[in-house]
Amino acid sequence: MVDGQGMKVVVGMSGGVDSSVAALLLKQQGYDVVGLFMKNWEDDDDDEYCSTRQDLVDVASVCDVIGIDLEVVNFSKEYKDRVFADFLREYEAGRTPNPDVLCNSEIKFKAFLDHAMALGAEKIATGHYAGVREWTSDGRTEYQLLKAEDGTKDQSYFLYRLNQAQLSRTLFPLQAVYKRDVRGIAAAAGLHVFDKKDSTGICFIGERPFREFLMRYLPTRPGEIRSLDDDRVVGEHQGLMYHTIGQRKGLQIGGIKGNDQNGQHDAWYVAAKDMAKNVLYVVQEHDHPALLRDRLGAIDLNWIAGRAPRTNWVYAAKPRYRTVDQPCEIDALDAERAEIAFAAPQWALTPGQSVVVYESKVCLGGGIIA
Image (tube, rainbow, N blue to C red; front, side):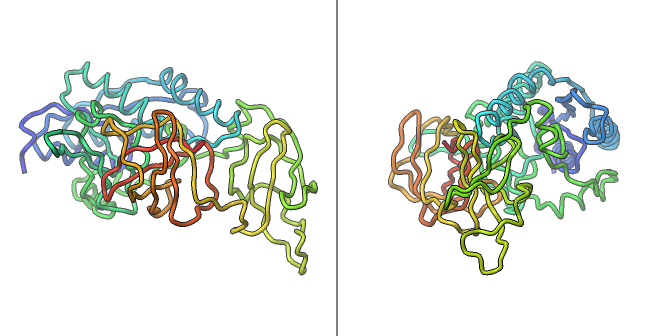
């Protein structure tokens, strides 16, 4: 199938199977494809957790097999200034940010997009599992961000901060492709990355012991861990920034009983942080009332269409990535804040994380949980 008509597209390539197949599909569709590898982290580029060198080798091999040119660009300064600095500020303030969201809006669809346009590209493309379409309704044309067909891999949640200008220049070749088929396509084309493990961890930094990594940049500040139910001291933390709402592992208080003894050592969960007193509050029971909320406030809003959705209308929202869409209404809305009410209580709503709003398969946008 040839429909690209020679249009120049720069594909962000990470060395993984998804971006490799995205480039392959565009090449097969007749686009003039250029691969672009972004180096975005330098602080410990030689340790066991940073795979930049091997990733670049993999990208070069894939580009050679596909038959496309490869560009390499260093966005380490942009990443540190625009993404990592904010990441640290949020943790220091006691919130739990999602760096993948900011990474997409500031690096992949801003710094990368600008660089690609300077190279003469008409479009950019990535290996995200998402879609984009041009939609006209009531005489108004807009670009919509869509969920991927493969619901288990859909990444529209991480892209909700994109705007009309960015979407108008973006292709998502994997929108209708399932992950199991992506690996098969790569294998059939002779791409050696067909069985490469998917990357995890912090965007562009990788998977590593998180607390130890954070301690390099945010020094410890020990304080008390208290039971929210009776205010007794049950342990000590090394810093509120190292903990998140709903956290169970790593508290090191598993042997202390709650009020309801019954010979049980029920698990403890982080329920709240008192930044002023430097106290971490915990509760027992997964479904403790302190961990359940049926509404939230969201700030730092971004609506993809450039206009806010209607209030008092049933939507679906994800208050974290790995959740099923939750029915909700937007009770109140202005330029600074949205109040979202859920049909059922949500577990461990976490300040700093993103809540993303959908209408059917269309991602409308969202904001940061306040």
